[in-house]
Length: 176
Ligand code: AMP
Image 1 (cartoon, rainbow, N blue to C red):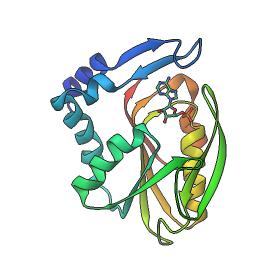
Image 2 (cartoon, protein in one colour; image 1 turned 135 degrees about the vertical axis):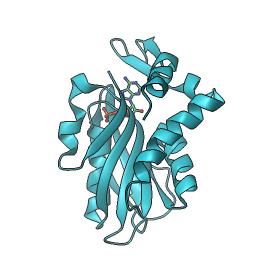
Image 3 (cartoon, protein in one colour; image 1 turned 180 degrees about the vertical axis):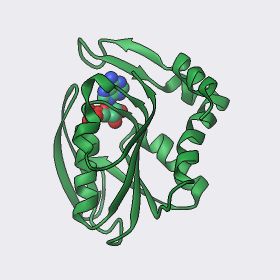
C-alpha cells in the first residue's frame, strides 16, 4: 500500500463536527467517493488485501460498507452478503442488537446467506467502538461462516474497537 495513496485519502476525508450528535467528529468519506481516482484507490486497498486470501464471500454493513464491499466483491467475482438495519431484508432473518458510538441499533442478515464453512471477509467504511462489526461477526459465525478478516478504510483507534472483534484479525488502512 503506497504511503502517498494513504495520505491522499487521509487529506480527502472530511471531519464534520457534532454530526449526527454533539461531541461526535464524523469522518465524511463522500469526497473520496466523489473523486474517481481516490475512490478507485480506496477500493484497491481492500482488493490488494483480499487477493492474498482465499475468500468465498464478502459481508458488508448497511450502508457505507456496501459502497466498498460491493465493488470489491465484483472485482473478485465472489458473492456479497448485505447486513442491513432492522426491517430492510425481505426473507427470514437473524437479528443482533448493539450499541453505537452515537446511539443503538439492530442489524439483520438472511438466514440462508452462506453455507457452513464458507470463508468470509467483512468490509466496512469505519471501525469505531466495534459494536456493529462484532454483531455482524456473531451473526455470520452463528450460521457457520468462517471469518477470515475484518477490513476497514478507517479505524478510530482511541475507541479500541478491534478488541471487541477478537479473535477475528483486523486490518485498517487509515488510523486516527
Ligand atoms: P461502531 O459500531 O461504533 O464501530 O460504528 C461503526 C459504524 O458507525 C460504521 O459503519 C460507521 O459507518 C459508523 N460510524 C461510527 N462512528 C463514526 C464516525 N465518527 N464517523 C463516521 N462514521 C461513523
